[in-house]
Length: 263
Length: 157
Image (cartoon, rainbow over all chains, first blue to last red; front, top):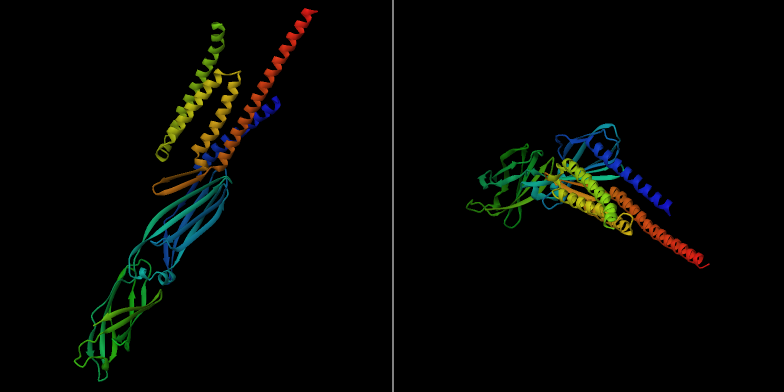
């Protein structure tokens, strides 16, 4: 009995010593750990935007980081995930490592799914999540929310009043002013704007296209000329009524028809 | 009787006071290191103070009841308190806090398991000590009875 008691006492003491040594070394090692995220850099292609964070890690502690996962999720105001980037690595002790953490957002796909983002400025949520398993024993997670602005590429889209001018015996020229502001920081709006004109009986009476080019944070102000068949015009040459269908065909996105009544 | 009682208890009281003082000094020194944590965990001070107070109560009571069964019972109580306190203080093994909109979550389950195992070992040790104490006592009583019986038989013969 006495030997069992003594053995239990020793076991408890040894466990305490291990525990205290472990806590002290973990605390010391944590101070020797240096992880920092560098300044984000953004690169944009015609269809994608990539945000890159350099992650610098130096593990001078006594234990390995067996699992290091950094995940970034960009989501819209309804918490729908728009883009996601994950970097997973392990950092043994005494190692200095730099990795680039990329989040690539496919703007084309995002704009197809969320057409309101074409016209409305909003804010996205940038959720960053870092998960670490330290010394095979202590999992640590760090999470942070940030917001990032989204500028609508077709903000304040306006189709002005259509003016009709006589062109020839059979056709008139409809001049349609078109303007918008590209509030986006990354996406250029470069391509074609196409307009189809329908009269009030939904008959296609004309179609015209113009080149548009609005680089990030600039605006476009132009017009589209459309040849319209004369019979559709009222005998008194007053502007008819009907609707125009507006299409955008750019390198980043295709959108349309945007139906706008006229007259 | 009073003299022997005071002779018996005075060193124990002195020992309990000295031990309590040491614990208090260690607590004061330790709390200096934990001062920066106050901003992150405002309840740290309260949790540690409560622990130190209960620990001192167990320490004094343990010293005063040394050599009795109550000493081991108190040790069992102390082990239970320590296990329960560890689970509470470590928030069942997951500590979460927020600094400047950044949320940290640390999993201390393995440390907590080690602490609980230590507490359980202490508990088991004290239970065995109680059994051993009672066995010793029974044995002593039995020996005394046998001796008395032998003396009585010797006197009769």
